[in-house]
Length: 165
Image 1 (cartoon, rainbow, N blue to C red):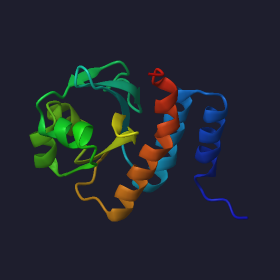
Image 2 (image 1 turned 180 degrees about the vertical axis):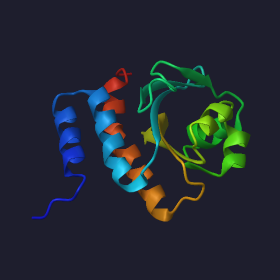
Image 3 (image 1 turned 90 degrees about the vertical axis):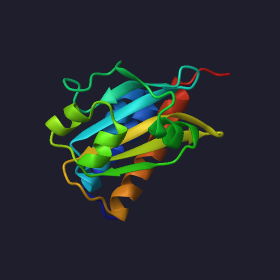
């Protein structure tokens, strides 16, 4: 058996789930995805469907994007696409970021030029999003696959955070 360079991140993710620690799982999946994406910023948000808001649960840069921050997505094209239609959003270049994100100045100040937002979906509902922002403007199919995998890896943590209904 050969081990890949992201084995420590995978082991951290397994340990986080064994200990039922959503915060540790989010940090480990960020580290795991970084091996492929090389992203500069990862945030993970819970979707409050009743309020049509996202609330930040995790940030790889808490100084710029602290956990607990929230954004109203009611009536936005992004909210419809990602939260309601449960589709991955891909934004390439400064213009795409400016068009879809109110905080585009903060994003650009961090030198970020592309974004992948992955809805975390279970039983037809979007529980939240896993978001990766990169300094390069163009994304590849491998980037999209890595981001989608991270969204799937986040699902157990979201299910643990979701009250039984």
